[in-house]
Image 1 (tube, one colour):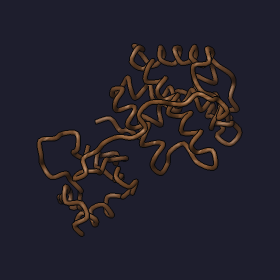
Image 2 (cartoon, helix red, strand yellow):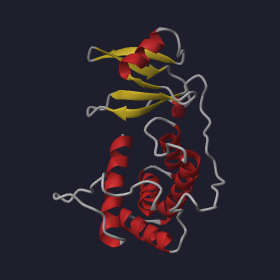
Image 3 (cartoon, rainbow, N blue to C red):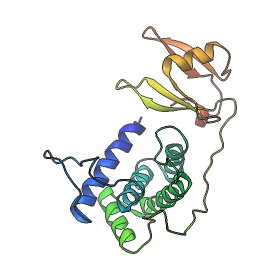
Image 4 (cartoon, rainbow, N blue to C red):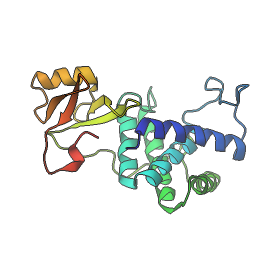
Amino acid sequence: MINIKTLKTEAEREAYDYFNKNIRPLVMKEKGEIDLLKNTLFDTDIDAFRHAYVSGVFTLELDANKAAFWGWVNEVFPGGGSSGQSAESSKNMDYWNNEVGRKYGKQAKSKRELAEFLKKALENGELIISLDDPRKFGGETSFQFDSNKPVIVLKESETGRNELFCDLSNGTVFDRESFASAIKNGEYPGYLIASIDGLATPMSKPDDIKSNNLG
C-alpha cells in the first residue's frame, strides 16, 4: 500500500529540487536542503508549482480522483496549506493549481515529464501564483462519504499499522488509541476493535463496499 504521507513528502522535495534547478534558484542550506525559513513558500510561484506537482504525482501514482480527494483533505483538515486572513483566497489558489497538476498528471508518462509540463504551465500563466489573481476555481471542493463509515486513514506506521485517522464528517483527527476508545464508546458503530500484536487496532466492519474500509 502507498503511504500517502511519504508520497506527499517525497513529491514536495522533488518539486523544490526541480524548481531550484530549472526555474529559479532557491535559498539552500549547506547540505543542499531547501531553507524553509528563508524562502517564501506560500501563495507564490513556488507554492503554485509545488501544489501542481504534488497533485500531478498523486495522479500518476494513484489516479485523478484520489489526487483530488487528498488535495481536498490537505485544504480542509489540520495540516492543510491554507490559513490566516487570506485562507479562502489561498484555498482557491491551491484548488486551481491542484487541478492543473491533475491535468498534466494524466498526460505525463513520468515525474520528469510532469515537471516539464508544469514549468511550461507556469511560464504560460496557467498556474495562479498570487492571491490577487481574479480567476476562481469552479470545480468540486467537497466529497461525499459513507455516513456509517466516515473515517479515513491519514498515517501508517513503518510496519503498515494505521496510526492516524480523520472523521470526514467533522474533521476530527484521532490517533489509534483515541479512535479505538471512541469505537468502544459506541460513537462509531461502523467500526470494531481487533487485537493485533497485543494492540487495540480499529477496523471497519465487513461489508461489500471496499471504498469505505480503512486502508
